[in-house]
Length: 70
Image (cartoon, rainbow, N blue to C red; front, side, top):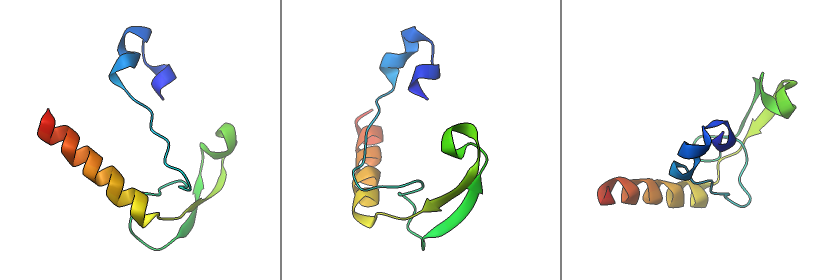
């Protein structure tokens, strides 16, 4: 996603990797499997959405902190 931005705007976005997290990791609902037409490098297919409660709350705190500071 960041690489799709114009070079002069890429510095405005930061990529953060959340270890042991899967697609849709920040939702706090039960795990699910669904079809994503963009999955598997654009070939489409089923993906697993598995929440990671610890990482979800960490991410939410970071987002709130960002908006409070800015």
